[in-house]
Length: 203
Image (cartoon, rainbow, N blue to C red; front, side, top):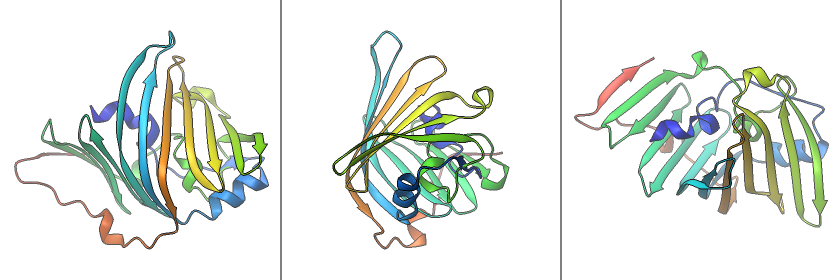
């Protein structure tokens, strides 16, 4: 099940950047040094049918620490300890381990953690109403991306929504709540201890 979500998070730590950064977007993202919160995620196909719905919690700390926990209705984790990325599926009793430096590709999540995003994306402000800001990011090379567009919503400077449209016109909608910016997060929070009896696959 964990592989259904790699479009969003697998390449989280690829080194990318965004051309024509909107100053407001840059300012908001640069202030997000560490973030934690909850999320609900749903995938809708091109006919409008709900394919999957899942929820959990997450935390990240720039530049290379990340933990994404899927809790309900399935349990799985995507974790970076700063050097290695762990994809853990307890149902399969399997963890896939990959060095961050060997990962490549374009990921929507990089829009939140990259200090500069001008190499792979064009980003524009599409709406600013009161305390709400919405930005649209389009990969400059669509052949290298598994998605065609990302919409990122902020409310009072806090991440509130992310909408991703893939190359099959499927929509992944992620809604965030209980967001806390720049909370002190210890590096040890991102350590992954391999459970006993779990198969380890190293890339």
